[in-house]
Length: 141
Image 1 (cartoon, rainbow, N blue to C red):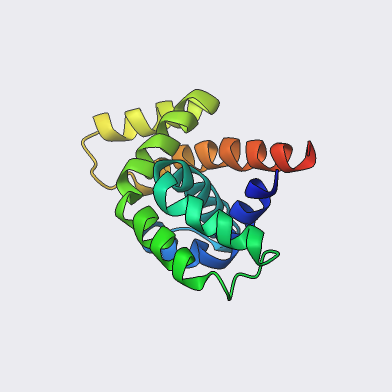
Image 2: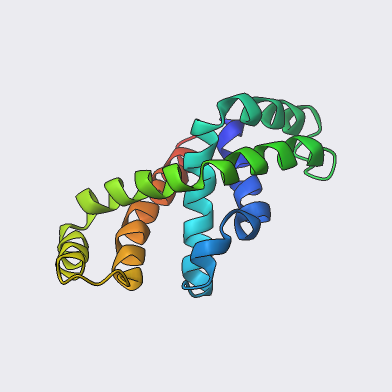
């Protein structure tokens, strides 16, 4: 399925722009992981903008430059859904890494609003799930 490859190409190009807020706290490897995961989740939430991008990529043999207009629209949609995407990743992460979820709960119950690292750990766990699934899908073509 070409679509998954286009999705990965898009994520590689746009992950930095998508993810300003978490970028501040995440290191380079985390940024890429989070950006990739956000792109993948975002594409399913932004199906209407993802379709034209995939079609353009198909018709141009994956030439991202030629599909920049569609890519920008998709990126804008994904940015607008950033909170929803982070929540999705957080839910996935809580299932994937219960101990990270517990640390976050403990931190929140401690009355600290500054549980950034704990939050990041849970979201990263969810991001790993998404990125692994995407890689598997590409490998199983």
